[in-house]
Length: 262
Image 1 (cartoon, one colour):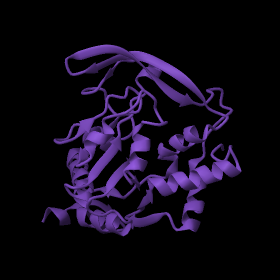
Image 2 (spheres, one colour):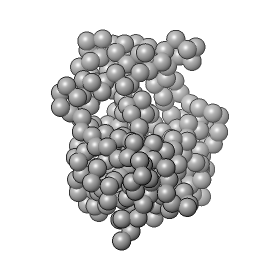
Image 3 (cartoon, one colour):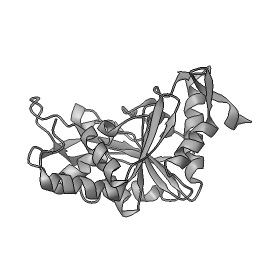
Image 4 (cartoon, helix red, strand yellow):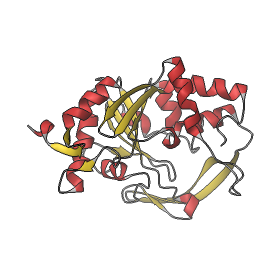
């Protein structure tokens, strides 16, 4: 059976799709859930498949099966195009945040949002909700607020909270003093349409004075019982409710507006 095919090996043991399915279930992911997945696929073990595409397909399949057709899988496909002075082509601009995300955006049934810096790709019952976004990056009306409104779960698939962009949503909603709003402009290509547009981004200074440390929130989530986890090979899958993460992040910023600054 395909579910028993080795995707990785670690300590002499094969790691299969079934192992990932079991780990996602242990981390609390269930059918019908809406999950936002940040990923690092290198950490779980030595890749056992001959081609990378087969691995990416298997991991995509197991994530989709974990929530079923009534659920939704969302992945970041961030390109930062306008920040780099580049046009954003929804169909062809590559994701810069991991091989799995760039593979996922081209899969059947997956649609990508038009955001020229922080686009996402979505599959499943609620994918349409994540294609509608404001012309901001992290604030009200963005996919991060949508994730919270729909009761979504953030899944860190082999990575940690340093990859969790949702925490920028918390920073902006709290109006942290070390970031400021900046407008970026450029060209968007969406199928046959091509047009100039402008989007806002709550940025930090580029002089090196401000660096985020998002992993500082992890012990607080553990203490509250908000964080669920499971091991796979030498990697870890973490899951947390977007709403619980938001509430805890806002509370910590109430206590210290620089809580997320390294």
